[in-house]
Length: 513
Image (cartoon, rainbow, N blue to C red; front, top):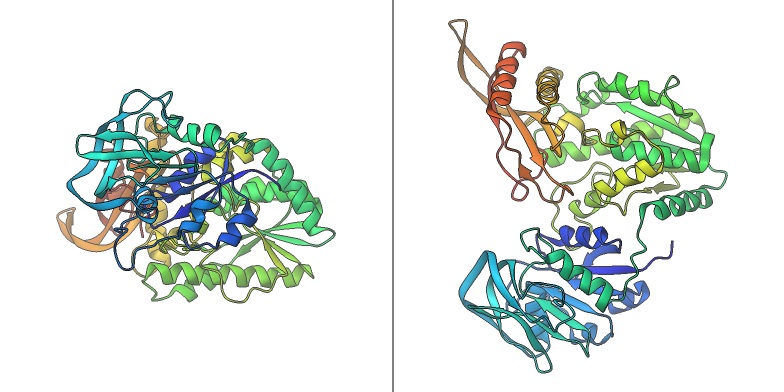
């Protein structure tokens, strides 16, 4: 699919995904790649613009990620953010030093409205700063376009060379007019047209799948979650009865979820799919026995999924393609590129070295979660399915700290069902991005019916998020948490304590593992 794109080069910053997300919100397609991508590859990709991310290093550090002058001579508009701005200055002959006063948080910035980056921005605007180094002197040929009392070069530019830089972060919501700034870079400076839209993506994706598959047979790994459901319906529209959907019940699903998935996608459901349900609970529990490390659990579950699919494929006959609902955050968080491995997603970093299929098709691999939902609506999937609670492929196996047993899974299923029921009953579910119960590995003393107990603690998690790249802990009403706590300790055997997780992302992930 031919489309204009902007390239985000990752220098290790925590906001790399958020930058890409903000660009996509402007209807401009965007990809994240490592800072050490070759110039030949950049030329081959032919981006309309390039954005350098922030990063934790100092540009003058011995092992700091750097680039050469050549990238600045490609004639492609470049926007450097935070570390990216310092790198631009350092490489091109400016001066970068430790700042006399570090800036963190919301800061009033004075901008030059003659700059195309800031023409429609207030002369004094609130921006998000996060730096200990600063640009002491801009390179020759650059003009300073923004400043603060302690940061003389809060932004700079060389329009002739198509180079722009901001010390602050326009991509975060705390920069009040950051979206305007990014739009100015994308549309006024990169001259993008904004052709990244879900209706055209869906049409092109279906056509591309049809062309790739030809008359081959396709097996879809259907979990019943949003991502795999959208992938399944997309494949059904592309290749019809050439598709077989295999739903693996690994025993790590939410309460009654296996039956609910079968009701939607099985023979009695609204979709004309070849649907197979595999009850593989014993197989997965045996593989997970005694395993406590979360990354190891993810990889075990990922490999066992593939092995089950291979077994089912052999029963069907020759199957050429395996379809997965992999999405873009899965790819980035699994460490494919400069970014550190946060967690191996069972369908990306968790795949085994050998997979017995001709090819794996991942039609949603380029999409963020909210883009997947938009694609689902374009495909005609009902809203109640498209907006259902996200659920990880490894299931409750990663919502149980420590080893996984059928008894622990039952505890989490019951606690989670109570939590979700009370959240919905109270009407506070609409503003939440994700909420669930997890089982800690902590046991503590309690008292029930005048008797001593030594049981587990359940942790409740609820976050608000727009893109699942960053998240804040939700401030749930105390009376709701109180009712949930009372029900869990009274109704779930083996639990005598309930905790609420108040941590955002970062520093935590949304999942509890």
